[in-house]
Structure formats: C-alpha cells, structure tokens
Image 1 (spheres, rainbow, N blue to C red):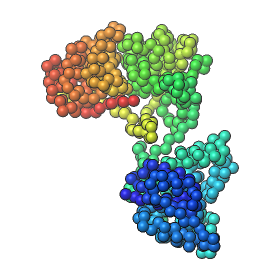
Image 2: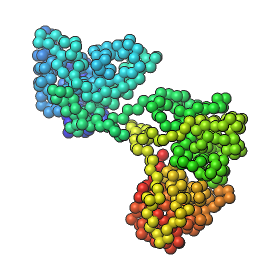
Image 3: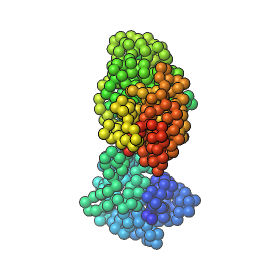
Length: 536
C-alpha cells in the first residue's frame, strides 16, 4: 500500500479528498504543516490521521527548517509526498531526502505559475484554466534565495482543464478549479504512482497508464450548451442540451428545426429523436421508424418512403400516437401527408421537399428537424453518465450478413426468412432488453421491449402483434432475440403464436434443448454468435 505524507499550510482540501478516495489503495499516513493553527491538522486528527507541526523558527535558514521537516516524517515510512497549499518553496535539503514529491498548481502550467494563478488567468482573459500536477524540483539558490523561474517548473505529471466564464471572479474560479480539476487530477496522479505506472527520471515523467485509443486512460469531454430546455425527463428537473462540434455524423443535436414557430424540443424529444435517427441509419433502403420512450413502436423498409412509414406505423399505431418519426430519405409530400394524419411530436429526416414542408409546418407543435445527409457513422463510442463517473463503450455497429448465420435446426430458413432475419436484427439493436422483434418481410409486426424475462418479451411481442398490428399478425413471422434463450419456453411461446423462424445469438447451456424445441415445432433457427443487449 502506498503511504502518503501530506504537507499543507491551510485547509488541505486536496489531502482530505485523497484520504476520502484512497486512489489506487493509497492512504494518508501523516499530515504535516508549517502552521500550528492550520485547519487541516484538526481535520486530519478527526479522521485518525497522525499530524506533525514544524514551524520555522526565527532566524532559521530554509534548509535547516526543511531538515527538521524530514526528521519529523522519519518513522512514518512514506512512499510519496503530496503538497497541498504548502506555502514553502523547497530545496534539495528536503527533496533529496524525501520520496518523490508532487504538487498541484491551480492553473495549466507553464502559464500562470506562482501564488496568484487565478488572478493571472482572469487578467489574461483566457477561456480555459485548470490545474497541473507536477513533480516538485529544487527552486532555491545556494544562498537560500528563491529562483523565481524555477518555481512550479518541475515535470508535468497530468493536467485537467476547466472553462473560464465571463462572470467569474477569483473565488468562483478557485472553487471550480478545486472541485472540477484538482479533485480529478491529484487522485489520478497518485493512482498512477500506486500502480507503478508513473516513472520520474532525469529526462522527465513517463506515465505508462496514460494510454490513448478509443477507450483512453483519461477521458476528457468538452461540449458547449446548445440550449436550455424547458425541463428534463420530468417537470421538476432542470435540463440543457450540449453540442459537440467535433461530431461529423448527422445528429439531432446539430439539426435545423425548420418550423421555428413551434415549441422547442424537450429533453425527452431529443432522447427519442436520437433513438429514432440511429435506427433508420441502419438501412440503405427507404426506411422509417416510429419511437416511443426510445423504443420502436414500429419500423420498416420498403420501395418508397411513404410505404415504409405506413408499414412502420401499422405495427402499433395506438402506441405511436405522440411519437417520434425518423426517415432515412428526403421526406416527400406523400410521406408528409401520412405523418400528418396522426399526432406526432417530432419528425426527423435528412431533408424535405417544399411540398412536404407545406404539409408538416402546417401542423401545430410538430417539430420538423433536418439533419442533412446521413453519411457514415463517425462516432465510435457512446457514454452513459453515472453518479461518480461514466461508462464508455464502442457503439454497437455490428449486424450479421447471410454468411454470419449458423443454421442449427433440421429445417433451414428460406431466402425470404433470411432477409427478414437480417432486417429484424437491425431493428432489434435499438430495442431495450430483454428485447424481442417479430417481423414479416421488412416490417415489424410486434415488439416485446424492456422485459425482465425473455419469455415475457416473447409473449408481449405476440400480444402486440395480434392485438395492435393493423393488417398483419404473428402468423408466419420471424422472431429476433437480443440474447440467447435460457430455456425452451420462449421458442415454444413463439411457435404457439405462429412464428416460423428465429434468429438469436446462441450460447446458452440449454442450446440443445432450445434447438430441439424449435425442431419439434418445425421452426427454423439460426445463431449469430453475437448478442445485442441495450440496457439504456
């Protein structure tokens, strides 16, 4: 375990934060101050952390004082020294006798060194500040004077940026740098040290842990607020939408709202419109999707956009009421007329003909978004904020081709069934787990979404197909499942509903029983070898 000696002259909030977090298992072994009344001493003592006070005596040289500091730390067996507002410039008398010593400075060095960093930042009018964790190096001349140019000049270990706002004063900036930058960067540097990933040599600092790539060791995200929203998911929650100007992919955040007189998009509108747009991006053929609560109420491809929309809507027109429509082609007047026939909140498309706009902008509070050409997927990762952190993963861009399908039943699927399987899987990627899609041709006929049991999801899809679909049902349909069937009951329920073929990942310990159930009912089944969970 890494043992830290913390040196502070005042409150030592970074040291207390490190004690709370214990990055990499490091512990605060002792807190030392050069002021007997420093608040950090009482705070440390309340936590059971030993404390030491070494005040500078009258007439005592800098180096003699530092030697007494070294003596005070003797016996604590520390591996690392961390300074936190320790208002003493250190010389070789301390640094050569102590372990590696780090400091956190409240600006992005080498700009704005010294004790008045925040004032320098504000006077300079820069847009970004932050903090720097650096190795402490000797800044004291032979005669005991401070070499100002060597203060805060040690090798940089890590930095963390924060924005500077127009209405910032020193105190506001100081607090944000502390909480948003120092509380992030200092534990990171200690974690690297504790893991053995931080190496300091005469040539500088090497950090083995600071990897790049799609999932880097450090994840920094920057975005500008595009709009303050009326509220969040619920009226008592404040919300805003932030825009990433580095995103080259078509997105609802970067879309133009073509009917400016209509009310602005809500938090839920953005979320659902994003889900709808991502679904129709799956297809090269004319495609339409209707989304409610980020789940598809229906989706389809067809020879024309209007047909695709009608097929998607007919899956569950009742649930589609007040939903979000996404199209992967320029919206024409015929499609627009069909969209306008029932209440929708938002329609998203690459663009619109003049005739389509005449129809859609005549609808009260139907928001019309133009995202431009869909093009290729350029964003490689997605993220989900958590309390205390965030999850980051690769986007699920995989979908099977014919050659990826492993036939596991006595009956092989027909060519038409295979085409439907490939369509259903691309829709399935956008269905909340446990997710089931029933499809016929290249249109959905029933969906079971967000269930805690897979057989429940099958039964729900069958119920929706028989009760809510218009002009279609589950008879002869293909079923797609986002994960394997743990028991045969899901396939048995599907066969009872009229399903003739199944596409699923496979991989259950009960695969043999599941396949046997399919064979018993004459159902064709293929494995993809890939799961497509969606949990948010």
